Amino acid sequence: MRITPERARALLVTHDHGVLATVHPERGVDAVPVIYAVDEDLVGIPVDRVKPKTGTTLQRERNLQADPRATLLIEHWDPADWSALWWVRASLHRESDPPDRVTQRLEELLAASYVQYHDRPFSHLLVLRVVALSGWSGERSGGSG
Image 1: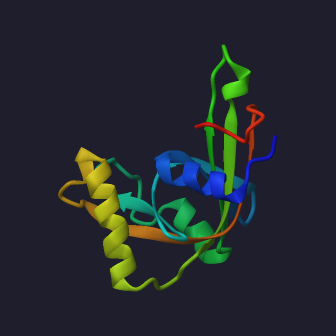
Image 2: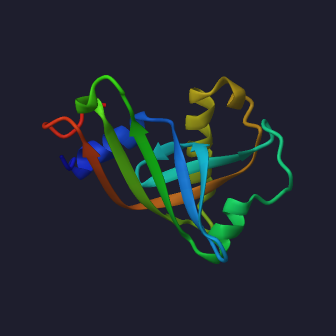
Image 3: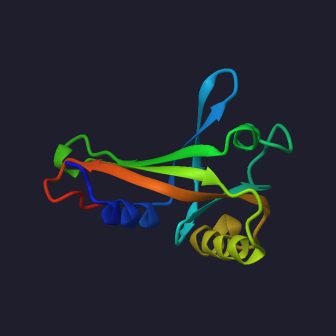
């Protein structure tokens, strides 16, 4: 069953990780697992110094510079109870120059959620605006989470 945009938003806000899909100019869809925080219609995805990186600018950043569209997919899987399955797709658009207060709020949310981020080891955040939400649930009431 389709879930309402309100239910999709609630699941997006209460979840904390998913798969970010951006568009690579040559190979098409480029999907990577990410963690995130949500504040109103904005999603913050950290580019941090906690995990090792091969370079200073990640491919997802280069993809978003070339094409600001992205999708964040979150889901819940239960192999024993398919009525508990759900997924939410957030269509996103990169905010190229978010205000400092927006970035600061998203950093606070990430720091509150993850012990690894308490000292805010962010190189920076990718800030994306939610432009559409859709989802599906195996539960007839539209998803329980």
